[in-house]
Amino acid sequence: MLCAEDDESIAHLLKRLLEHAGHRVECVEGGLEALDRIVSDLTAFDLLVTDHQMPGLSGLGLVSKLRDTAFCGIIIVHSSALPESQAAAYRALAVDFILTKPVQAGELLAIVQRVADGHLRGM
Image 1 (cartoon, helix red, strand yellow):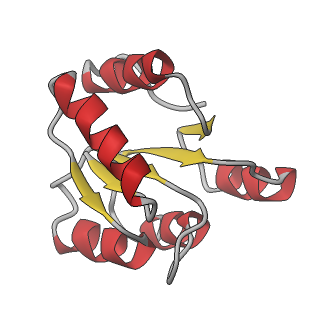
Image 2 (cartoon, rainbow, N blue to C red):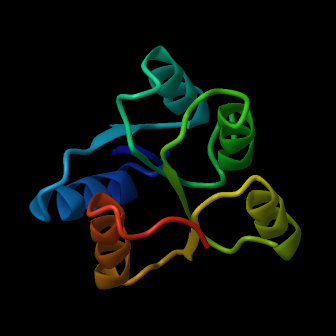
């Protein structure tokens, strides 16, 4: 899975949490990096966890650009306060989940595990 998060401490926490649960996690600092990483190999990641507010390219911009590619992985938006208009824009782009920070570790792990098991897709 790929994690796009510009806050180093949150990225580190997510990486440790998910790796401890047995997942392979790569972290990048922003939307542009995530986009480059994903489009370089559209099958490398089956799951993207992205923040909304990032320098260069926001999570919304990232998802919008990914929808113009053949990326078919699960997309989880993991963000602080998201105005309804932006949440609606994510839903219009068919993201699979929107989680508000701080999310309970168990909730995130349960969703990621169900995705990994192939039992969960979509809001």
